[in-house]
Length: 268
Image 1 (cartoon, rainbow, N blue to C red):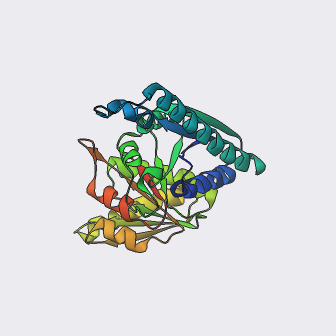
Image 2 (image 1 turned 135 degrees about the vertical axis):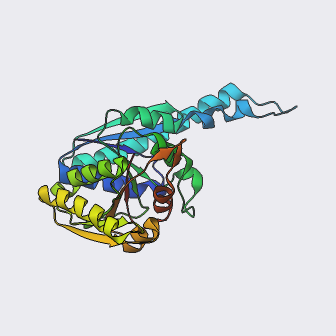
């Protein structure tokens, strides 16, 4: 198994770094770490109308590129050293380009992508989803695990399940993680018809138990996102299908991703 960690080394990314390393250790997976030098920062002076002001733009661009390279190398070395100290096989990649595009390219060779909720550009007070992770979530070819700011050790899992294609993929992906991690799973199904909600929850519970995973079926009516958010503890991995319509995430997935207190596994 190969886990891709995309990080900019910011405090907001430390939770993702720790969770990716923990998963690799527990799953005997290989860690691939990616730092992307944002070419928009390097080209920013070229895009400004400076009027009569004269700046040595090539010199500035070269200095900024060098500074970003040094930062990327330091971040990658820090993560690499920490992973190798606990016996995790690791490879590092320093790339230049648009972050979401480069991340998506590397994701094609991974089984799971781990990212923080936001990056350095948004600052420590930002609590939503950063623009890069938002774009990645809408196009990733592999499941994306969005980590909280704080370091977390997983103790359980929640699955939002409505029998849709993306929900079935989320069920299978979660099973592949929950079994080796020893996580019990609570299946949460929501429908205005309680019989339908119960049928969905029992369907997923039966699959999980067939895989040797302890599971509980919960059926509700009302708002799926609110039920999932109210049930999640910081140590719960919350998994759900995230359908994309016209490049926009489904409303339930988007609300959960923006307000979850713990890690969220999003599967398109």
